Amino acid sequence: MRESARLGPTAPGRSVTALEDTIIGGKYAIEKGTSILISTYCAQRDPKVWGEDATEFRPERMLDGKFESLPVSHFISRSEAEH
Image (cartoon, rainbow, N blue to C red; front, side, top):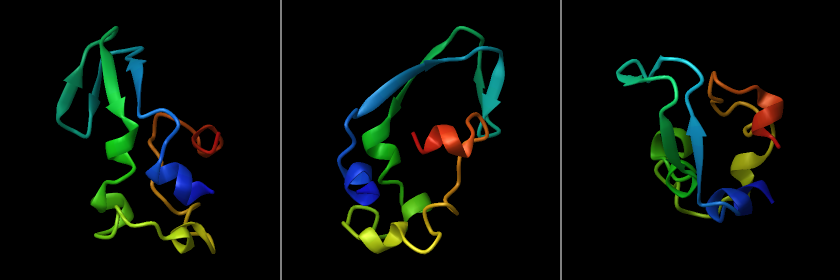
């Protein structure tokens, strides 16, 4: 189910607003109150996270602790990421 949701997210994007001035990825300065659109569809196909086969349906990538070892943003907790 997780692999299906990764490739076919129920929401292809989402908008977030910075609660404070911050720098994302060590190079993008974001001012407090700035809205940012996040493309869930693209993020869930990032080969840096999912590998060169990121566009392929491979349910096994979510088994045996592999899902739990995926990088999670430092802005949210693991439990928030799973919901």
